[in-house]
Length: 506
Ligand code: XMP
Image 1 (cartoon, rainbow, N blue to C red):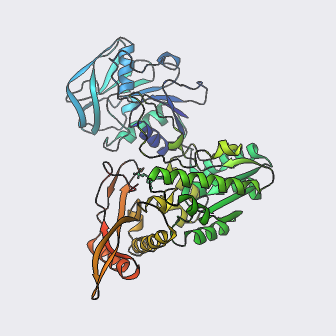
Image 2 (image 1 turned 180 degrees about the vertical axis):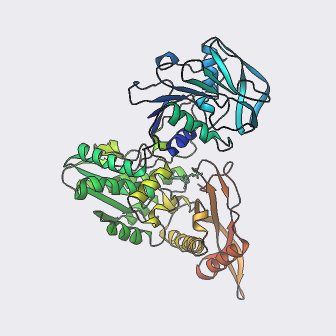
Image 3 (image 1 turned 90 degrees about the vertical axis):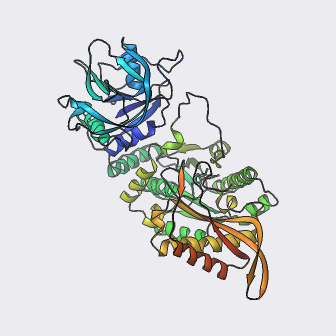
């Protein structure tokens, strides 16, 4: 595997994505928590950072623990750190360099630069430049304004690059990373979804033996794939629980339960709608609603789990982005919304936790799901928040409001599916606004609810943009909603990007 040491760059996860795309396993670790260097590690990549190596308290590591013993690639900050450490000179750039540049010199006889073309576009993002290299370091690529765009240490496989090969704007970045990971580090490209399934199932068998596991299904991709993997390892000893919190999409509970049963899972559906509605009564504050939903979920789940004799493990669909300890070199980022609404579950239940997907990114989870032949309808589902429609009904929640929103949402989502637009959208849904507006239906004046429709494109939910859905489609959906859903007389479409808006309205 490849070890990626994170100095806090926003691009660190992308380095891991690119290495994984080469079918090579890699892990990200914070620069200040380096794991034991074993024979399994075939090479090390040092990430970029928002810091400058010239700052007194800049993040630092002992590079000698692997330099010369295995290949090392420093990217941006990582390159500058090594250059400065071994006697070179790093200075503020005369012009700050952000965005595209082109390689004006490439020494392709060096392994790292093989097949990289002259004039290839690379993406720069740095305020410092390596002005002078230490003795024994040589330049192997340059751009018009950066002489040391890439360097190599003579007689050893230590490299540095000033640009970011991991971003898609670096046209041949993938070739460069392949050169490092495959040709220089010698990693076999054998980390595929099939291999992952095979080895994970074997590990789970060993770890779980004859123990029983309980797992909460949500209808989403992650919990479904986790369940199928564990089921493959331990069969009927996996007990799944699917809770109807009364805030799911229309008919979702029944249809998802059916497809789980079709997949051979031992799953119990629990109708807890009334408990959730009772706990939510009169609460309008978004965080208050999230907390109430999270708390009742834990209560219901815990109660159900206790009905299963001798359970020792809690299975969870946690994925890699949730567990990477992001290094915060510039202070902790503020919690904008508390997304991890079932975070308290393992502590409360006193069970050991098994998370077979905690090394995978979302699209890798989908690939594993395909390899397990899970229903494409489950794998291709849009993300849906844990608190469900509860955070799409602004203000307090009543069963009547849920019923209205379920109808509106179903018309919108089915419309997207029927028009072939569903897969072009990352997430979509409807929001019930706490506003009434005047309308006219026939000869009658009406005073009814307003709903907003939201559809966004995104890669990871961190940033998002609204989707330019065809007017004719929006017109049809709006007509259908107003004609069919009693109590709604106005439909608006949300055209805000994230940031500054968020995907959900609460
Ligand atoms: P925002 O609204 O923060 O949403 O732009 C980003 C992504 O997170 C989902 N989301 C949640 N998921 N519990 C969840 O499980 C929550 O409380 C929650 N709030 C937002 C949202 O649907 C989007 O995919």
